[in-house]
Length: 303
Image (cartoon, rainbow, N blue to C red; front, side):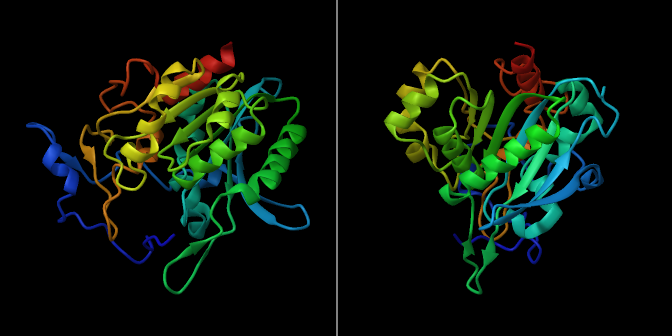
């Protein structure tokens, strides 16, 4: 997969997205997230893990280290980035959606949570092609890392969550296919992949509560191809909360545009997830999520 190099290009705010023709009177385009990014990397500690074949770097935010009750139980959330994001190093903490969930505000809303960000071993070829994105080859080592963290913090780990966007969303599905009874919650965001009928049937009958977030104007994982064929199964699955908004927004209420060589603002649902699916004025993005993603996590943990 070839993607633009975010370090060498600047967002072009002059290009009018193709989807703009569907906007209604009063709607406007927003080019910038409203939360503060790159300000919380210092809250994460860096680790690495090797299984003899692969070595994976990962970042961990521990609520106990940052003042939470050392005798408390907290969910373990692991966030999977999209293609090319690992090339940004610690910047991946922001791009995968995890950064804001380590902030005091989000931590308070969740009742505390571990936030873990593993990095795929990606490389960029001279032609821009990205190799080594999340896929089946990583499921075994990521499960080992998850188990390792659970063991290291055994006195403090409560419910178990995974979440990912784009290729990270695909990987979230793949981990559920192989470990559907292990996780308590999962968020699949803007994924171009969907499990087979048999695999989804197993997942839908598991204990895992799943949020599936996908914009109807997604430029890369089109709604028509990636969600509509499975709509019947999704609507019947009692453990799936479907969030399929007409538009992906920024916190200011504007329709999200992200252009670095091509438009992908509606694919970047992860930005809105990082805004907790709540607008800056306090309005929730969906009535099914009155307290946003942090509230959804807290509700599952309280059961």
